[in-house]
Image (tube, rainbow, N blue to C red; front, top):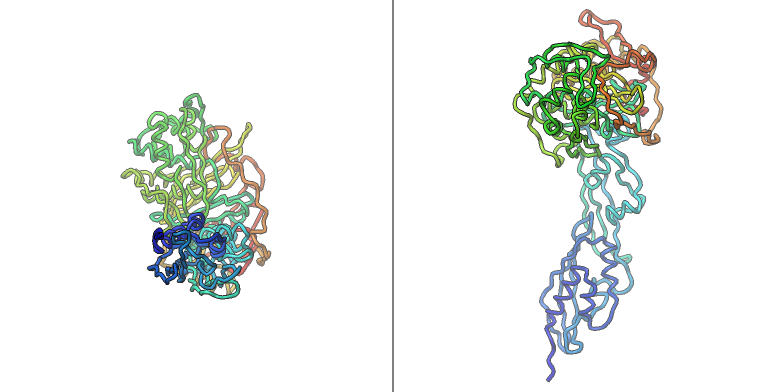
Length: 637
């Protein structure tokens, strides 16, 4: 008597296990007769199956050498979820063994011929992207810099569909660039999906709404930052960060295309002296320690000088910082720090740290110095160091708060870098030194308000006998830290410093504003009357722009989309030649109107505004339109 090998349960189990792993060869080995199993592959591709789970029931013999085994299949569909259905595997004895008696219905009970599996989707409305006040910033009406951060909606390509899954279709809406792309799946939600076999609907899977995305952008700080750089004839960028949290409050570029604020790679110049000072204070140097600031100093063969060949003789370390003495910092870095300690200080405030703010942002680079000459140049922000305004703003926030925190545009975003606490007490020592920069040092002429602390920077780049330079200013006021760079702008103290310019009396006395503007101004001021000084500074700066506009003429719109701009050539901000140059150079010596600045004085002031209300503007241009949500601006931030 011939015996049948195995049992129907064992054969069905092997077949189901091979199905789960898409092992078509293993499935074929269990068949009673040759058959094409292409329907399984079509099902996987047509429904974009990420995982298949087949739970087998108990096989039951039905007589005459046949049996059937029920199963429950659960397919995990990409972007959609799980779809579960039931079916059965038929078996029979062939060549004295239990084999699968396969037919198309083995794949799904409704499959009888050549019909294909497919999906039909119905997407929910896309969720909103808002600023920190809850106002939408994804409608295309926000300023150009905000639109750079947000990104835009575009038609999906075949590459997008392959990446995102079959619930997306070529020509459908997908986020392109910025937050729209980074948070595509969150904002889009999941569609209600019909699973089709030919023209028959097998199942409908309920979709889910997209989740709104709130950014950390503060519309008032953003508006003030826009007003600060809007009319410069050189590319300029400004970033503001909340100390204590790392939340990005404002990101502004006054040119389209390349996002200099986040992706710029500039030598930080003498703003980096704040980091060198941090390292020196941690090593025991006191702000009151007497040091020297000669006209020249040579370190490792590199001859270092100060701006305009200045010398200050014997002075305190705090004053050397305020006057930005290269000839003090370069020797001290070599004598008291060395390359390892300066590298550690740089990395404590964000250099060489990975960034995850919600949109692409360049990591600041601080290579370890390979010689004393390079260390000397690094001490005042030259050599191979590069940083963006974002990184310098977050460094300023760290110096203000005593802890470096990874900057972010979205609260709760998982970070690759960890918070770093600065050495105990060092930040407290540095605060009055940064204040001295404003009250008596290189930023004194900027006319910044009491309580502002910062550091100016003039960063050379390029090559040739007379190197051009970027103008920098970084610092903090109250709970807002900031950094601003003017590309090719010259001296940091004379050009970049005044851009962080609050006007304390503008908001309380709207002057010659028209009735509509007066009402808006008064309402704005009342709404933030109890806010921080930094917030009131933001509003008052905007009102100064509005008053200037009223006197200069009516506003004009342009119907412009920043994404129509051709991408401008990236600035070559890598340092090809190390030179020692301090702050405050060239701005007055060049003589061209493009680098001269004038003060716009407010008229009709009352006695409470005896102090001149200065809002620095480029000498050859004036504001041409009011900051208004409904306008389509040129790329003004």
